[in-house]
Length: 115
Image (cartoon, rainbow, N blue to C red; front, side, top):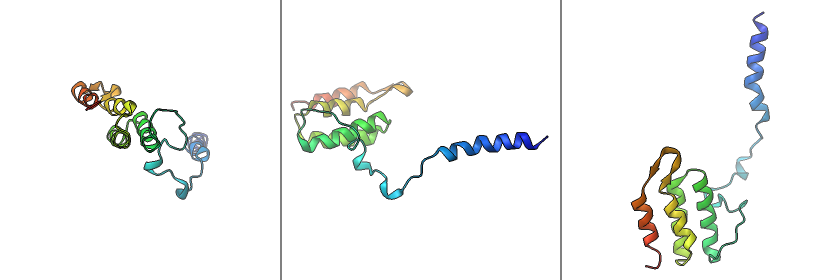
């Protein structure tokens, strides 16, 4: 009688392991490549700013706010007139899941436009 619940429990825990794909560490995406391989988006940015912007966008959508801000600042440095890079950095100060918004910091980022 005890073997049936034990078998069901073992099957329940083993099934996700069987479904997990085999990952090759050498094929892992580096942090610098996040968002640049799979994301295609036409922007007005210089080519040097496009990669960091896409990486920042991917990091932003993965709630990696500090790393996203760095990527957006890298895009700004590559193309100071690329407005979306400033928007992206400003968005890193909005954390809707935790009801945290730093409006002053976001406005300060947008204040860098045209400076």
